[in-house]
Image (tube, rainbow, N blue to C red):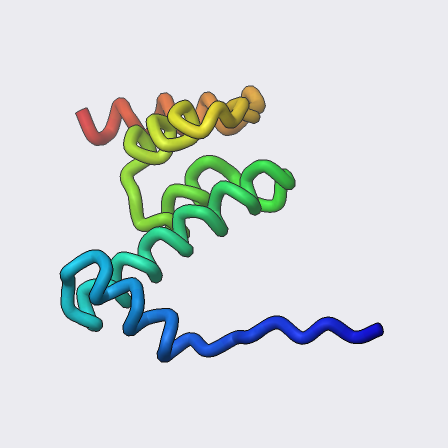
Length: 94
């Protein structure tokens, strides 16, 4: 038995833009931004990226990224070296 799933991104995009009442380019930007954030969370949960790299992928500041992880109930995985680097960076910025 073979099951075929309809995949028509142009029609899907048209539907969601009409439903949300926004133009196509705005919706595409929002979808890409959201996808980038979700992918960074997935990679972070798998231990494939650090906090800093996850934030960079998501195009967020480190504090915004930490807030997002908290919002999604994602545990923070930080080791001593990462904590030292973050503290050192914070001292240079502040």
